[in-house]
Image (cartoon, rainbow, N blue to C red; front, top):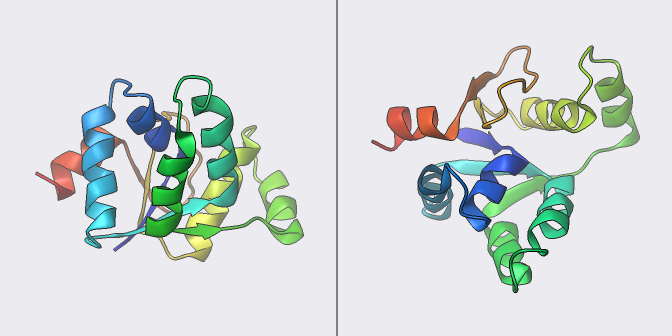
Length: 133
């Protein structure tokens, strides 16, 4: 199954936030090829920018992500389409379009207002309970 992983799931993991354990289980399942993990290229930049202030060697974590996830990039067409979605979060819109393009069945996010027209949204806790219990 193809799953799209939102930036906040990676940040929960690397910064050991509230949903750290769930994020670790999801990450391990992708590493073990139980699921195909997808992410948007800007996620790497966001993780680096946010986490390097608190984590000494963020590059090792980014290397592991790069090895285990399929990373898609935004094109001019993607940005045009994302800007036409009636939602104020451009990053979420781009992630949604990437998930759709990559035929992801689920978007995992802990963002309660994440935009999705026709792809199932699950929190890391919901995903763990349904697929990793």
